[in-house]
Image 1 (cartoon, one colour):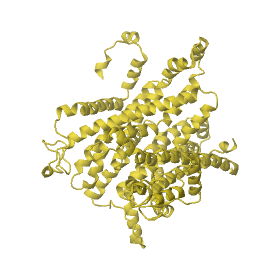
Image 2: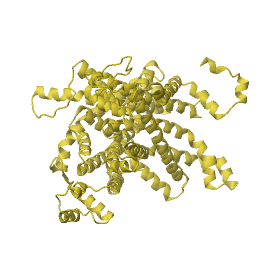
Image 3: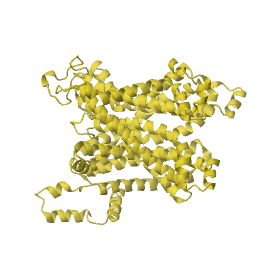
Image 4: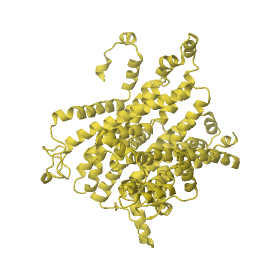
Length: 305
Length: 318
């Protein structure tokens, strides 16, 4: 981090911005910085990977089945002799995309409901919070499984086997994880809407929408960003769990969870098959959680670093 | 106190109704019909189909169907499993003990790890022990249960051959049998318990840190009480109040973990029942198991509320 101390104190003062300040605080959290690098590498690997590692994900070569890591297959092969590295790159794209997309859904729904509940001074706020609490006490995984079971075939018919299940998983995971965001946003809104600068905006004739979008929401973003980061990790775990239970993506779509599901019956003869996807999920989740932790330090203005 | 419990019950009932409503709406909105197997089966004549539909009230308006379903659930008439050929409630009652045994032992293990570690870490914040505990907790709750389960099987069953990785439910008696029952539960309980312990440790630590700085703790120290006395009798008692709520809020995640663990170790509990019924399209069982999970969550929330009132008597007077 020595290279980053180029800016002299005066230059730093000149270029002061909230984002730079956040970055300065984030940098202090060493695991978070390492995690950010790790996650970027992982993303780069799954995005660029297929252009570099041009092995098909579905070439079957039973003779070379269940081999450990070698030069021809750096991550080894599965029982049908399919190359695991290629499959992991392909699956990583889906796992990470599901995580990001589900996070966007949950943050959007959560912000919307939290903002409505936080701005309303009537019964609406109470009703929305009751619904939020109700959703919090729903058993997530059973409900997730139930929804997938009920809607799987319908969406498959409309969007194709992979697209349908992708939309379904993203909507369901996102739709079951918005509650913490809604609570955070509401709490922020309740305190921010009474602040002087919002009152000033109101006095100047700003409409409620403008008050929210220009004045309140930008100040409430910190906790939302942190919760959103953690949600990516939770969504990746949820998707892997579904695939691991054999109820996520179809068998020919090798997401990390799905590879693990296929590998779990071959633990004695091919442990590498399970260790690589499991390790990838673990690294992605730990990295995202550490980034969330670093952001918590960086975005919490009350904390002095 | 009894008035407080009653009030909590009055709050728990509507949320149970709300959950049942959500479940029912989901089922009603789903494309396809729970009787689609019958509808597509050419051997079932249309009049029989119509009679069945009328019998099960499938052509009634949705709110009437909901009330019927609710009344049936409340009376213990949970339907018939097409796959197992038995009543759903008997099937679930058969499977429930295994689930509760594993979840209960795992919770116990989690508390036995989390409370001492969290308390000790909070008494020495930012020490080496605290940092190690924090790091392990962080890694612990980032490791998904399905991966820890596989790692445990790999290490303790495949490599070391210490523990069996398939859970068998043979009835028997005697010390040997009891030991075998404990031995086969070690891995699932460890997987679930360590996962729980990881997040609980963080809760306990931060709850302790919130309380430990308060003035009354300083007063207790000033009176000359020993460290152990101050921590256990003065700090912990108050720090445990938020922890109880957090444990209740974690329950949905615990059940999620239990489903995965039961599936990995093939424990014959309601979690693996849920998965196998989904794979077999056994709708009555799926609905009932989901509802049981929801009831358990509400029940644990209720227990947490009651405990909360007991730990902090100010709450039950409000």
